[in-house]
Length: 389
Ligand SMILES: Cc1cc2nc3c(=O)[nH]c(=O)nc-3n(C[C@H](O)[C@H](O)[C@H](O)COP(=O)(O)O)c2cc1C
Image (cartoon, rainbow, N blue to C red; front, side):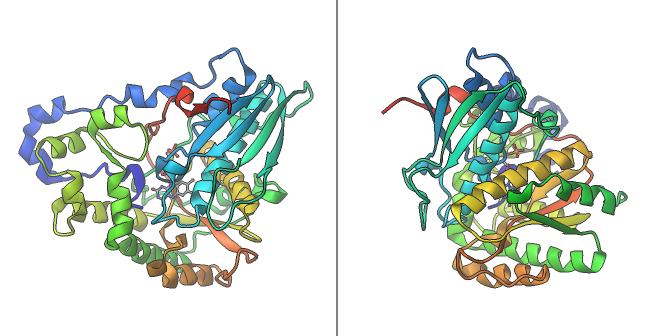
């Protein structure tokens, strides 16, 4: 998945082409695409909408925002997966999509608690779809007014959480204390978190991640799944605030100069392809610690629960001032990745799963310290609501 909004590519070539004056003019104004971050927390006159305005900010693969919500009666809602927003090449069993839906539910729960509501959530009320998601609901949710409901201390970080795709500061080590703190925010069903900041172990995980990235970008159909989802420059991003955003002055310059187009991103001989590959390699190489989230089995419920665990770890990292960036390539279930999938499980001392009853890694993350990142685009909440029937 090249991943995602990745490309704040620093191409010296493009700067030379557009010149300094042009460089100053070519900025991206993503105010429209980022508006949902400003809308969150405003009162919509319905506690469900108030909570949903935060839930749409959940992390989700390729920023597909696969959630669709139907409001039911006065106090309930049903969550569906938008089946037009799947990633069939990089996520054939829709596992990552389900994790994103789990993160959405956890943020919904936290935001509702903030407003004095307890949620009664029934996961997959009509059964767990296998081997892929289908039109059945992902969850049915009832809002219950409860003055005793506990607020979640992680909720305060919801608006500052970011997936950070920047090289990490090589002079700042990530200590044991902060990594231990991340695991401590998981509840019994959220999965388990473990980590390493040991250079020897990290070297092996790093090398597995580099190989896995090379496989994803080198496999035409998985790479093209990402290039199809690229939004190149301000206008495309504001019109389609999802997928992988290529924004900023350098990207605008490369777009204007014709260096970045969807076609040449697909072309393995192009500068755009080479820079994309290098961009993500550099991220992997700057990792200062790795962490991973595992679940005891791989049912749809485990995946939703892993989504809750994922965002809890991410919010805790944000609280600690630590940047977090998932590296999902090795965990993907397409045949070319099988060897790396097995290898990453072996590296953390786990047998590679062969059935959904087996334990597995649901998320692999790199950690470190990085400067501020701007929020990722989102579709406005009203576009994710569906009518009755
Ligand atoms: C299951 C899952 C897998 C993800 N894998 C990757 C990944 O491999 N590389 C990456 O750069 N981002 C990955 N992301 C992060 C998403 O791209 C990110 O959440 C999305 O673009 C929205 O940005 P935000 O988290 O900053 O709001 C993943 C997110 C989820 C939930």
